[in-house]
Image (tube, rainbow, N blue to C red):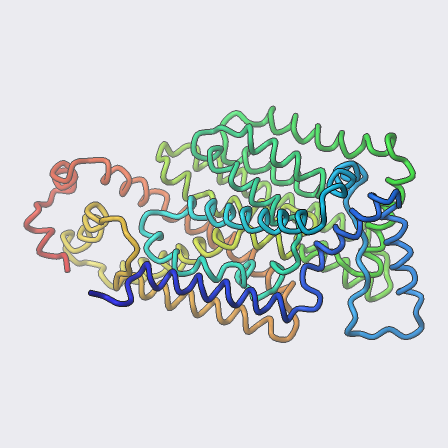
Length: 460
């Protein structure tokens, strides 16, 4: 009887992850900092106050201090639009303990949905090793160490719902729940409307529904100018102070430029907007161009292999990328990195085997054809594990000097480029392998011109 089976090791990893998360939450001061902002706004609305005015007053008082402790984080203001205030008013009627417990469970549940959606993007062979990494995902959003999960930001809920709703979209072209989730998410965070690129790239005949939902989201945002003119003006002021005083631009190209310009005392609005538009245009055109090539291939497996790259590209379209945004695509980033390293491994192996007989080159395809599902490792996984571990450690060491944001952006762009390159390089090979798995073994051998005896002789 084996003591350390794969399932037991995974269970131990999950137990260690939960314990570590609990210890971190007790040591962090204060934990749930974003959730605390929500709770403060709920209490303000419940007593008939103005959360924007109160937050702006707190920020102004802090900003006017002659001497500030550099270790104290500036106060944060509620920066969600006035359309959310009626929801806060309803939530304010719920007892605090019950509300906090419900929100905590919602965060956990939606984080689990993020993991589940990422799992749906994995291939059969990748599910041998992916379960060992899932317990660590919460500690490495975007593959770089960061404690953002302790913030309690509502983005974990929003991204979980959106990603879960996207699964039937890319698989069966059913995007109704996805559109509803994105529209609801945009009420809290308007930049999340960029997620509508998902059905345009992965779906079929989704241009009109996407345009309709995008128009509805923008209309809801614009209508608030008329419905709550004073509150909306205060909301815009709170957002501006988030940039001017807290330098909270995110870490997209425009965000990093904006932070640098604020620190230099220079105007940032026009330069950041131009940089964002140029960068987003390049990403969007790349997604559309490759999507057309993928659609031309009738192989469904090849199209599903494109999903992690689209997930990363869609996040890159966000004008204000934050840590919790990349947390939602950690598994897609892992899959892209593993596939790229696997591609390099196969490329090197193919060069070394140049001129060898066909039997040995076909053996790996037959091994895939016969492979059983399950959580286990193969020797062929070792180069991928070592390669992935190497660049993972390199990226995390690069952030030790406080360069988390530029490192994460570079990692996102590099993985998007690597994923695109790998997908196009493997497109023909994957189509052949897919057709092979659909054929009976004898028919597969007949088309390859080999026999079971000759191929088996080359198998380990």
